[in-house]
Image (cartoon, rainbow, N blue to C red; front, side, top):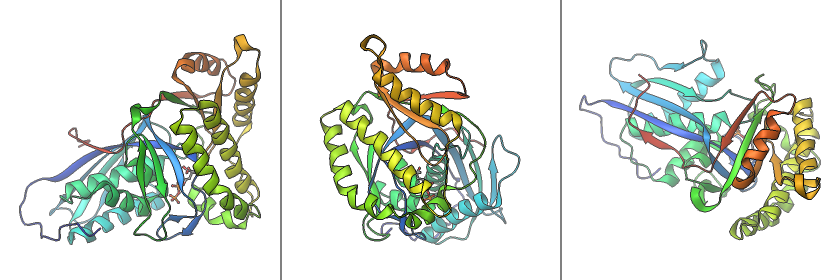
Length: 345
Ligand code: DP6
């Protein structure tokens, strides 16, 4: 974070900013860290920013504030752990600016938390970016991505636009995300199927910490460079079938690590499995009813179904008839974190 200005804040102009940041879906997953403190991952990961799932956060620093005040719109209580995570973001940004000013933070998501749709990615990247902007820190996208990574690994992938690679690097100074293709590069769609709004019992942070207890994590990591190469080739060629096969297999690979960790983690519920089976069956159906889509699942029960834009309607129609589906959110590839003019307070 070398470029952060260290000047004192001595004018009374408004130190307030609002950021809108998307969730992202990983095609190659981040699972396991080399360093839990700085969230340097064990492997590179590849993702897409999502147009329909986002967080908005307003941060204001002020002389009159004696404590950091944090509020989630639509939620009465802010859990202790969430509060601590947000305060840690504020502390990092304050340190860069060399200020002790306290802040008011108001944030909201347009989707339920902790059901496997990367709420920490959108939530913590939006707090980080809004706080930096409010204090006038002029960070590059790379610097911002690194700062977001310290809050939540996946948050660093919500900074660049479109299709993104998080380069694991070797330490906290060279682990960040970059764009590999812009949002309009490929007309693919992520139809997110929420099957339960119940909070997951084991957080992804806890899950990462267990990855090395799986006897298969070593072989997962050994295969990673080839996986990354193969998916980038499929994306470059816009070969949807090759791409889809890789992402589905990769998601199952990550869940194989979860299932065989000690203790074991099972994020799916019966509706998750029913949808996984449906997606596979729809691909194998006779030509007139064949539907080519592939699933990928993060640390939760929600299923992300990736299809080409031309098949979106048929997919959504089928999902609406599927038992156990609570909510469907259709996403295009989107831009990353942005500063916006409308504040939440
Ligand atoms: C399963 O970013 O939530 O979604 O760095 O501890 O905050 P922390 O973990 P988090 O990791 C979730 C990982 C995943 C897969 C992925 O998106 O790559």
